[in-house]
Image (cartoon, rainbow, N blue to C red; front, side, top):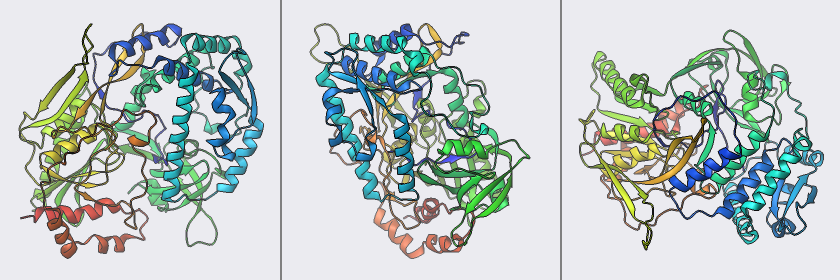
Length: 617
């Protein structure tokens, strides 16, 4: 199942995952960008030395490496345990069963290679696209899809265990690929998209064994957990740049959908070209510059819409309430994207609001780091309020959709609000000594040590996409009773990854899981996440739809059971009663529901509870 993805039009997609890293010593990369069998072995060696779990299932690792290698080919091949393939109709839906042929590398193999008939697969895809066009899955249907996929993967994993796929089997697969690379180097279905759908006009490097070995390395790492990976350093730099202060050229709007779903304008950004041209939240995009976008993935739609400042793009829009689609022309502009944003809340200017998109660190310019920026924005809010003759009475720190970043920044930001006590503890297994009966665990506690930024009442906004470093801050604030958490349960990633330059090939970086972190109450939030003090919906109808979290990721590190309940520092019922009597959220939402910009339901509803907190006695 594909997750619904939200994207600002001016951004390109770079898949960085939910990143949470410790910084390491910087080295200048050499002018080299190859990835060979030797680099694959370097990855295995690094895993042996640094990975959190020393009990590594190598058979499983080599099987996943071989599977990823086969799938990386432009003409993708698939590797299956023979027993599973012969029974796959029991585990996969009929319209998911690809037609094709099979063969074995050796008659005695307990696994086989599947070569899909891509012409028939494409026909099936188009038929499914037509059948599912505009179909919206219910919450229960989405849950069942995710559960079914998890079951299928667990059965497939157990069948691979029975195969006992070895290093020799992996070597035979890689030899087969190298020998037959030319046969599978041409994509079976030619792209029929317009020229402007290429990656910003960049010429793509020809596919080679470098790509196969890199895919194999990531397959091995995938067998460990979903957060360990190896990638080009420049890709990491690009992904970090996406959440740092930067500017892009586009129309300034957020989209969702793509593929089998309609492309919907989730929200045009205030004062940006899309809003000024009349684009509204909820508009469905049917075509870009006269060309249909039906069936295109979201990132390809984005590439058609974005473009240089001053140029025009025409969108064909379907809008609820209008009998026919309308054309809207938008003049592109330069859009400023800030990692830290702040403002005084409209009609509640005694409340300061700071939004943190990512935990960004800049060694070259410390003033661009998230901790410095938060301090600057807070003081700016104090000055703005003072000029208006208002005194700040509370602060909202918005960590929604914040996937994390550097561990030390999470600690620094927590320390701004916590006077004393443990912020986070980090635990990792020590290497086993010869003759030892069990692994030792090393524990490091980091406590608050710096003067507080403010003692104002504090509210933290969280949701299912608040992950990793965001969860460190949220859990520390909650456990110390320093502020109230509002929103939804967080993602549930409580593992720490460290970045390494790949030995012998510094053009690549390796991200490995090394340890777990624990909240001040000595609970790990791995899988379970951080629960808000008060649940607040982000939906118009007040519901809580299914959200993809750590527990839905395949092969995640397991949760560690803990029956103890965290201490409750606020009288929640008292706050709820205050809101029931004095709350203004629903009236506000009614007044703005027909505006061009989709209301931030969660924030607007949260303001009532922040005012309740101010009046809390």
